[in-house]
Amino acid sequence: MCGIVGYTGNRSMDSVLLVGLERLSYRGYDSSGIAIVSEGELSFWRKSGKLHELEEMLKDKTLTGTVGIAHTRWATHGKPNEINAHPHLSHNRKLAIVHNGIIENFHDLRMKLSRKGHIFRSGTDSEVIAHLVEEYLQDDLVTAVEKAVLDLEGAYAIAVIAESDPDKIVVCRSGSPLIIGVGKEENFIASDINAIINHTKDVVYLEDNDIGVVMKNDFYVKKTGGAKVSKEINHISWDPKAAEKNGYPHFMLKEIFEQPMVVRRIISKMISDDKVVLRNFKMSDSKLKKIKRFIIQACGTSWHAGLYGKYLLEKYARILTEVDISSEFRYRQMIMSGNEVVIALSQSGETADTLAGIREAKSRFFNVISFINAKNSTMDRESDDVIYSYAGQEVGVASTKNFTAQLISVYLFTIYLAILKGTISEEQERNMVAELKRLPEYMEQILSQSDEIIKIAEKYYLSKEFLFIGRSVNYPSALEGALKLKEISYIHATGYPAGELKHGPIALIDSRLPVVCIVPKSETYEKMITNIEEVKARKGKVIVIGTYGDEQVKKYADDIIYIPEVSEDLSPALAALPMQLLSYHIAMKLDCDVDQPRNLAKSVTVE
Ligand code: G6P
Image (cartoon, rainbow, N blue to C red):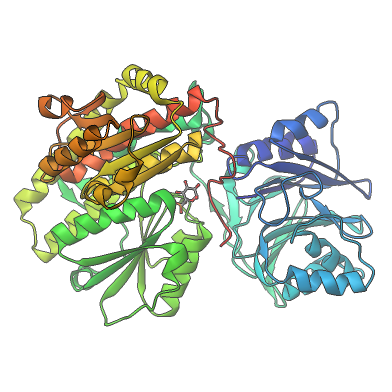
């Protein structure tokens, strides 16, 4: 989604704002811009395209000023062009705003303001905020912002600067994340800690309806229409180096190769003496034992991890589990008969649809357990309990290491519940944990086959479409494999449960269609072989992801990538890796920008 960064202090504005935008550009990247107030005068620069366009425009300038704000955009209203890029200016051009989110009543506000003589320059919903603040601005910028936001409907994180108040950045949030970074003789604002972490690790998280007033030597927070509130300063323990590529050409590749390390980290955090532990979990074991139904809701890759969770939770913990896409979840009647828990899965902890689902569930008194990667995210703060995926910062827009981390966390949570309920024995737990401990090494074996995967990518990268099939726990793997390919190479790909092939998608198969078949040794193996024969009979190209030493499946395969033999339950955490690499190398052959694929955003904070 869009990213915001702002600065007040003694450094040059470009050194802070451009670097901040660079570190935010994984969130949205169709245009960018900066506005500063210098010697009481507002100036601004905007450019469509990726950030380097703006950098090029500013390359010979040193921007000095008292306050500055910057934005990288992911278009919702209005085309991704220069006119629609942020910052947006008021009618009199003396005030500038940047905005993340969507203003739902912008048509009405725009009409009202146009009648008062305001001339709008862009096609965005955001511009209305600048005009509205101007309309309310008499002598105090803070009061004007406060009045303006009361008129807004929708989701927003806003930062405002004005010539009339050249020492202040006024920020406000409702539904979109925003933080204040606290420094010495300098302060920052940002939509995401990444933007400022190389300058400060002390941050204040704003809550909905907070107004933050940020000056060089001070800041305060108040409630919209209310009094000042005291805010805790949180110290972030991350290493900013985590957001660097460490010699890899892309974040995505680095993150694919980090997966063995991530699994080791999860094991160290969630397993003690070969038993699963849930750290800082508030819900008591007796309450956990009584859960009768889970309702999982998530988006994108996280939804696929949720589908996997259904298989495991039902199989081992014997708890009925439903899985919804978050944006559809709210349209269902949530029938509560007692002892249901809503589970949310999210890498970012900020996805608006998933967050809305959490809020809806909480308003109906459901307990919410969230599986989240980003600590201190909004979902982290709003969920009753959180299980972290410990994937470390994920920068590549297409999720990779967090997907496998989610699978493993769900796997371990299931074991914990199953032991509590007595639906598995302690010996089973020991075996399941022992197998998990072998996973990092297995992942390393798969990653060492990169060269073979590159050859397969070279063979198929010109295909117009792909099909991915799998059964049982590897049906979500098929969906995830197809999503990865679509996201970064723009090749149309569909994931299907293999048994459903004959009910429609088989019509697509001809000699040009590559079909990725996920067929590890499992209970569904023979049925998968039948489905592969069906593909072969129609001359489809069969790319197999199979178990080392499987000679039977090799007979049908045009190409084969081996994964080590594991139980079916853990096979999706291995099968994901060759598919991620295949997508990556196909995208490379097609010269696509894998870390910042077109039209996508890492964290989508609008509904
Ligand atoms: C966006 C990203 C996807 C991601 C989805 C859910 O659409 O492009 O890669 O899977 O959001 O994100 P979350 O942070 O909630 O897991």
